[in-house]
Image (cartoon, rainbow, N blue to C red; front, side):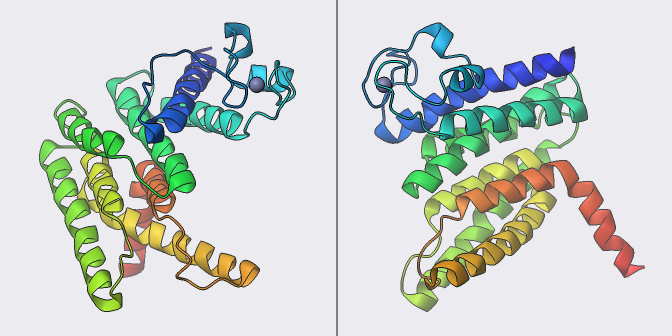
Length: 253
Ligand SMILES: [Zn+2]
């Protein structure tokens, strides 16, 4: 029963994340006006605004203009709902659940906005650094000191890489947004997870980059945003940090 509630809660939060994803880059208010169809601007009634279910009932089309509703809506709602369930199964009804759920929610917003616009909004990442650091004071799984180290290592390491890249290739490779995102990841997960996140996201990002190059014949300068890979790496680190580290350590005897 509680599992089901965590899924419903996640889907409702996901619905709000969709509003943030659409409105934050336009610098619109995320509270008013209420939901409206982005194509015909018709206000959406509450019964057409039920996460996931309304999309299915309406067949993915607006009730008024009949144009397609972006698959982003059910994808974000579904992803947020599953994240909520997985976090609930790991941490139960606790402060840790809310702490990490707010972290994953921020990563979901950042991932989708970065995919659309190639920017990582400061209004998410910078307050996220503060929330992570303050949360570390009350969350049993991370110390304040570890969170602080995570911010310094996350912000510092990418800054060094980005500066070096720019000096070497005379153009910007990684944006300042990525630096602030990794600082936020460090604030929530600590310094060891930052290293793991960099390794995982570089690995997944390189593989994806090679696949895109082979499929589309584009060269590596065709920038794919790095934020989604950092976010994915961070989520893997969040769930499997201890398992990955002990798996790695067994090779050292
Ligand atoms: Zn419409």
